[in-house]
Image (cartoon, rainbow, N blue to C red; front, side, top):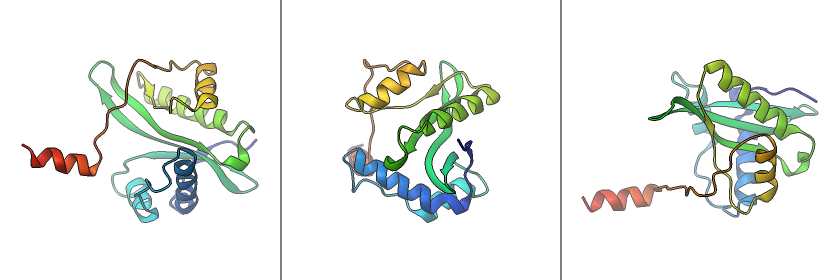
Length: 158
């Protein structure tokens, strides 16, 4: 099994493909607005906005974990796992485990007090995977978001 490594700018076209594959899996095929150029700029510019680990199978990136630092008023610095994606073709081969292992090791090395992420309530295989790894799937919390249109609408009313 290949070990995860930090992604490079050259990996971003494949990372983008996996993001699109995830959007289709999550029944949101038209929701991806980020571009390869934006991933390259945001991840590898002067002030990177995220860290991305990738894992390869036969020299092709087949999985990724994209994380960034947040700040919790209760805990201090925490890591948010935005996405853990394994290509459909490579699921069941342990890639998700090695990627999550890498994220947890990274978080421990940074001294964070928590690593958090969301999972769709209908994605039972992912929920079981995370629970088996010792994560607490908090089913009594709801994710709250404002998309760009909601932000504009909100601001128009104040």
